[in-house]
Structure formats: structure tokens, C-alpha cells
Image 1 (cartoon, protein in one colour):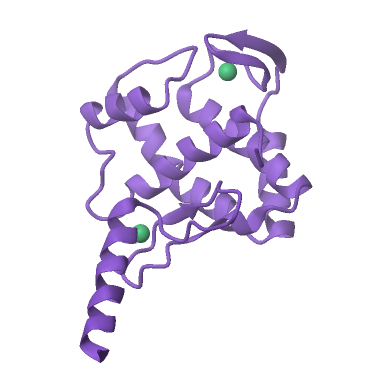
Image 2 (tube, rainbow, N blue to C red):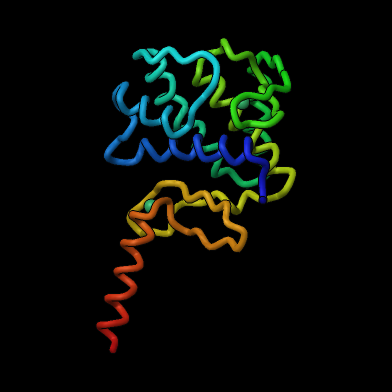
Length: 178
Ligand SMILES: [Zn+2]
Ligand SMILES: [Zn+2]
């Protein structure tokens, strides 16, 4: 395990949000938000309204910049989130999740909690110098983020769709040469 479960979860949720902004946008309706919340079940306040959806959409460029920043710049970006957030940190345990830190209260808006949870997760990334696990997808036509949580650092694509497309292309290229 490279990161603790809560760090890995926060990174995956954040990357999902960032990648949803790629064309075609997959976070444009409340149904889309419901899918996000099914995949990443957040505790605490969930409004499921247009304002919450708009806030989640609005933080995506900032999340992307944080997640892809070189190490020192990542620290600066994390610090700015920490500075502007009224921290109210508590150790909590809920559902299957063992003791972990919630940096702000559960009543704070979802987008604010996603932002601070991403910042908290990136503290681990920075401390462990594991920023290389976040990169732009290796597919030439894709700008989504690939998050590599594998032990052997084998994940280069954002999704199985991109991985499969490139596997097929590589196979065809080999066939053409043969
Ligand atoms: Zn939690
Ligand atoms: Zn991709």
C-alpha cells in the first residue's frame, strides 16, 4: 500500500472530478453527480442541488492544477487551500473507514470538503515524494489524469478505455510490421 486508504480514496475522487471535465463532460447534471456519489460515498452534508453541482464543476480546474503541479508548486497550492479553509480537524471513524482525519466539519459544503481532502491527500503525496503517480494520460489524444496506485508503477492511462485503445493500436502496428 503506497498511501493510506483515505488518501487513496481522496485522490481517486479528485481525479474522477478532474477527468469529468474532459469532453464530453460527465458532470453536467444532478444524475451525473449521483453517479459520482455512488462511486465515492461522501459522509456529511450532501445537498444534491444545482448550486452544489456548480461548485463541484467550478473546483475542477483548481483540483487539476493541484494534482499535476511539480512538487514545490504542489506544496504552495496545498498551502493556499489550507490558508483559506477554516480548519476544524477531527479524527473520525465511519462505515468501513477506520480512524482518519476530517479537516473540516461534515456540515461544510461538499466542494469545500473535496478541495480540503485533496489538499490533505497531497500532503501525503508531497511528504512521500510520490507526485510521479499523477500524470497526464499516455494516450496522445487524451488530457485526462492517470493516477497510478499500482505497486509496480504500471498504470500509464487514465482509464481502461484509453489503455485498450492503445493496446489495440500497438497490436495493429506490430501486425503491420510483420
Ligand atoms: Zn471520512
Ligand atoms: Zn486517457
